[in-house]
Image 1 (cartoon, rainbow, N blue to C red):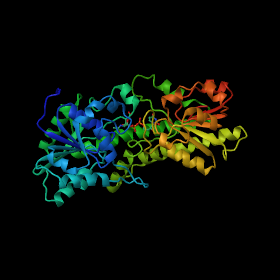
Image 2: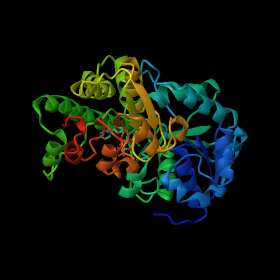
Image 3: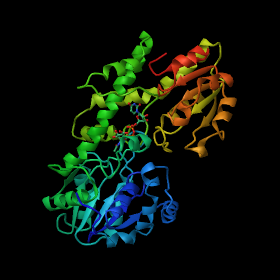
Image 4: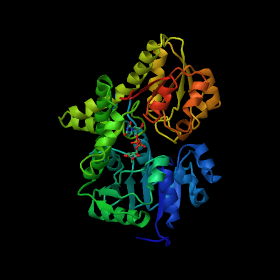
Length: 435
Ligand code: SAJ
């Protein structure tokens, strides 16, 4: 593994978000002259002031390195780079079709500000075939030939946002990667680059398509496993079996079982999105991923299911959901991050509004979307609560506090509250597959 020796190549990272900024920090830390390009002026200004533009433990711990990145909104910095890494978002539209515009704009900027012989590495999540069928045609139109005027490779990002990543010790410096390229030379260049910045194995793939397929397979695997336990939760709820206890029991099997847990829904910019990349691309080749589609339908049904649980719980108390003040503990898609992308909270709010509930939102990581300033105010104003995000601050609440504020019903959207204590206090409790 390389140490922090000086490298002759200059590197530019396009897109300084959850993926690009940690990468740029690491590249600079490993001794490359590093440029960062982003269209967001506020982000660039924050980086120049050595302030992280978003909450991320990895960056918080390396803020002192931010000044080593020449961050700019001027795309001509790309002209200086021998290696350009593209880390822009690849979302899906409302029909879940992949949206390639951010990626195409990045490619157009690279072509406009190119340097001969550049190695261009795509880290954004894309489905098999995108490099060859969507991106390379832009270079060909500009009369640029792969392996002569430029090299292109794909190294799918494996960033794992949030505290749990830090607690597990995984970050951009030590997560193994796969890399694929259009040419042998491009593959060797990309592999050498990643081996110089990552202290973990870098696996060369047989083609760029294989590398593209890895990421969507990794995340579809996670999505179907979550869908499995979400379906179990619905069935066990009817059978009066606590699904969380059963999963923990099954997880005592030391092999051939991988615990996933039911919840109020699947959010984030990876898991709920990536399977659609595979579904849509396979459809173009005449294959229908029925199983992946059903898994997506199950996971997409969980926010409404969560609201139904609250509706029924209030009815058991002789209360109507209409007009009842319901506090949402958390908005972010996962614990200890300030990220609303595809968050189940969005659908839960929609469903509650349809039922006429009065909604009070509070997320300590997303104050701008909160209706109250603090947890106490949330509890004061609510008669019932839905735990949407298992931020530590919510897990630390002593259930007696719920009683003190007169909370009548709690739906635990991440199955992480103490159900026995809550029920003993006479508060109605429902988890996702546990009562
Ligand atoms: N979720 C469940 N049940 C589970 C696990 C997650 O409902 O058992 C929900 C979460 O609440 C969240 C969503 O699914 O809303 C996604 O959770 P996640 O833990 O997968 O978090 P992400 O979206 O940050 O996923 C990233 C992914 N990393 C990359 O795509 C590079 C994913 O591959 C990682 O497995 C994941 O981090 C991780 O391990 O934390």
